[in-house]
Structure formats: structure tokens, C-alpha cells
Image 1 (cartoon, helix red, strand yellow):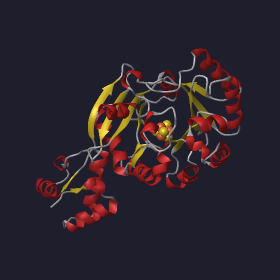
Image 2 (tube, protein in one colour):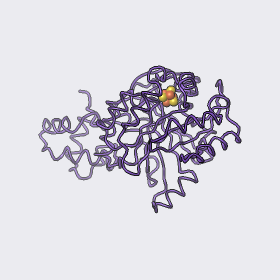
Image 3 (cartoon, rainbow, N blue to C red):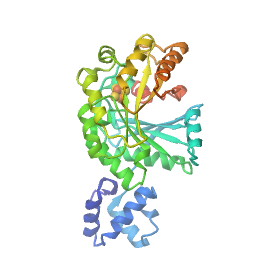
Image 4 (cartoon, rainbow, N blue to C red):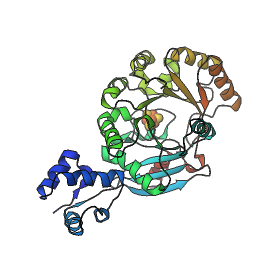
Length: 358
Ligand code: SF4
């Protein structure tokens, strides 16, 4: 008889499973606590259960995990995890990013005791959005991740780094989360209700899937939203992000103006600066105009050139001038350094390297 994966069962199926084993419903609650809060992976470790119960349960069920295929640490402290999915053929990535100086200062100002440690997780294997500057986009969509595979990235990395603690989660790894919104919403529910991760420390990043932006507040209330914008005109955005031909800037901005942002909250706009494509002062001025009236923060990310890319890094001078134009117009704009360049930490790079080696 095949063993049951306890992580594949939701609360009510778990209760049903326990009932079929002749066990009371409260055992399901205990099991959830041990699997998600205590983050154990072996039934034998549940010391709240008697030895006999642990042995009996181990003969019927197991607790699944994701296998770490490769782990790399960068000189700047960024850690990259390549996970093998259950099918043994597909791989996904998560990247653990320590706070940069700006964030560390921010944290100190807010008297946060735990240093910020952000885990960037994947929502799909591959991606259909096809952004031209992204290696994952070149892979195309392989499949949606299940909610278990999304949550397990967090639990696996947390086990690996204990006693350090993941403080923030961002859906900015492989895939477009809003193209897998059902499983992402389910994963968010598990992360907040069972792992007890704060909603305010979770950010979902989208390339601009308008129907998903409209549905997200209802399906996953209170999580933060980030938009990978990268251009302030339809002409440039159509060129570098094909998704813009489907959901152009007017409909995207309209959806964002409706998005419920909590008081003192902001929508984060990611803007990858591509040399000669979107880094002019005219681009900066268009961006200011576009974001007018939206509580926002702009992260400027100078492009990190990778092999085979048609794009170039912008000059340092252009990056500073772009930021100054935003700041002078009253926008919050922060230059983010590309982290983990020596371990291929940009979106999809480790997975793409692995694909090429196979
Ligand atoms: S940047 Fe994000 S949305 Fe665009 S192709 Fe890459 S993974 Fe997909």
C-alpha cells in the first residue's frame, strides 16, 4: 500500500485521515503544528505522540520535503538553492538575500532586532511571461507549482539556516505568481495560518497580470504587492515585456489605483535599468508621471548582464541621474545592487545553467 504524504492533505482531509485511523480530530491539529510550526520532516520526531502512535503512523504515512540539488553561497552572503521537484525532471530556485545597507539602516531605525533575511521563492517551473531580460522567460512555462511545493521552499530553507530566521518572503523567483493565483493563494494561507508568517512581511511580485491584481486582495488580503514595471511607456514595455501587449499600461495603472494599500503602505515598483533602452531622463520623467497619485516606492536595479543577453548594463552615471530625477520629483527611489552575481543569482540563472549542463 502506498504511503500517504501528510503534507498533501489540507486540514479537513487530515482530520478525515486521522478519523480513518481511529484517532481523534485534535491529533490533526497537533500534526499540523509539528509539520508547519516546528518544521519537522520525520513522524518519529513528534514527541507529543506516543511511541506506538508514531510507529503506526509511520507505516501508513510520511512527510514530504523538496530535495536540495545544489546550494551556492555568494561572496556577498546571498544563498541560492536549486530544488528538485518530485518528478525528478524539473528544478526550481529560491534565493536567500541578506539586507543591504539601506535595508539594514531601515531595520535599525525601526528597532527591528532580527536582521532582515529575505527569501525569494518561485511560483512556477519556467514562466510564460517571456520578459526579454530574464533567463526564466527563455525557458517558457513548464508547469505551475503546487501550494505544497511553494510552501516547502520556505520550510526547507528555514531548516537549512536555523538558528537564523527568514524574516521576509517575496514571490520574485521563477514564474509569474498571478498566473498561478489559486495555488499561490493557498500557499499564502498555509504560510500565514499554519507557519504563522506575518502577511505584512510577504510580497507578491507581478509582471502586470491585471485580472490577478484585481483578484489578489480578495484571495490573499493584506499581502504586499510589487510590480515589475521596467518601462514607463507602452512602446518600450511592449518591446521588453510581451505581457504588456495583453495588459497595457493604462489598464495596469487603473488596476493598481484600485489596489487596497494599507495606511503607510506602498506598492513597490521594480525597474531594471537596461543600458540605452529605458535609462534616459525622458524615461525617468515618464515614470514620475505614470506613478503620480499612487503610494509607491521604486527599486532601481541596474541590469546584471548574463551570457547570451541582448541587453547591456547602464552606466553608473545614468543610474545616478535617473535616481536623482525621481528623487527631485518627490518619488522614493532606491538603487538596489544586483546580489549574488558570482553564483548566478538573477532570476532563473542557476536553473538555466543546470538545464544547459543536462
Ligand atoms: S521576469 Fe518574472 S515574469 Fe518575467 S519572464 Fe522572468 S520569471 Fe517570468
